[in-house]
Length: 220
Ligand code: SF4
Image 1: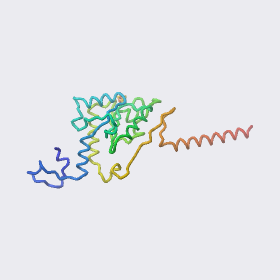
Image 2 (image 1 turned 90 degrees about the vertical axis):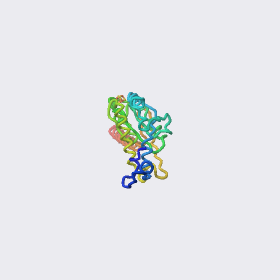
Image 3 (image 1 turned 180 degrees about the horizontal axis):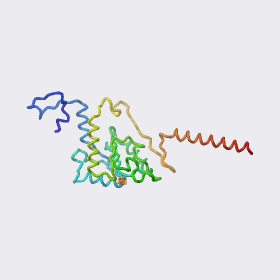
Image 4 (image 1 turned 45 degrees about the horizontal axis):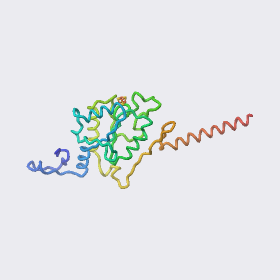
């Protein structure tokens, strides 16, 4: 057991008891157990997904970090690895899957595309980074990132989890429920959180059109 990670360092345990006794805090043991049993969701979006698959396979084998149980169901997963180009068509599905994951949950943006649009950033059909919709915990650079880079990103996530405090964690508070409104794909992608901006823009444009047509009517 990695007892040095869960033992509270300021409490001395006699050497003869060190292999049998651990004194720790709830935060420490909770974070230690969660960080070492992350279950990533099994889904991929583009070429980066191949690197993710390689990271799970025998050569790099992220089961060494307790992450081997990739789940096909979002309800059984707590890490979403966004591995690939995020198209506008896929965003509603990605957000819906994220909403279906239980708290606490984490997001890794794997590669240039998921982090900021990558080589397709200017594409009419591409979202320039999944962080426009989801709260990203770790960004992994590269096109594609190597399996080592993904492993490094996952280890950084573990370190982040180890620093969490139950007293501060939003998801541990009573009645916490944060659902991200699912974007709507029409002629373009609409983020429901920005409706007020669209409405303001439409109202301003309508007002300008009315003034313009009034002015034309007076001239005539
Ligand atoms: S970052 Fe590169 S490798 Fe990854 S999905 Fe985009 S184009 Fe493909």
